Image (cartoon, rainbow, N blue to C red; front, top):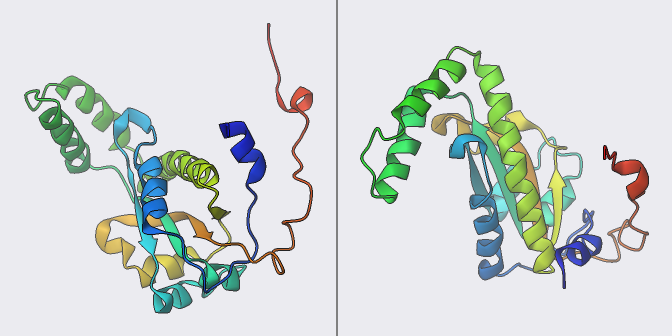
Length: 211
């Protein structure tokens, strides 16, 4: 099946069967799709946290718009961005990159100096907003991979960031939650949107072309 057909198949699931679990193999593939996502300057300024533990899911659901969807999902995947850019973080990424490529450290020094001159003078909130946007690319690829695997999923912004950050102690890692992805097995009797037609704006209206 093509990617287009996979995307036509998927929908944002509204109810999951709590007794059903997604295989670790498929979870691994979804996470790998997120890890391989492109990011600005290759910095990967976010991390992905996976929660399967039921007690923890119950705690995270406080403040969620659809708490049952969160607690009944097989796994919750949290996309959490750096709270700000630092010279140390930038250097760590590029030191790792040069080591992996067998290049001398500092090979991209002029470029990392430029990054630092741009990012480090900005307010932390602007840094976070930029890093958060990068994480959405990974979320999109994770959703596409789930669709290819025929794994039900839901992209989520309707949750209490403060609760997520506190329960998972994300501040300790210099991270702040951005978005969630529920993964599980749809409960067709309660997933009210499942029988409905998938609706998107027509191509001729959605795409604006300059030829």
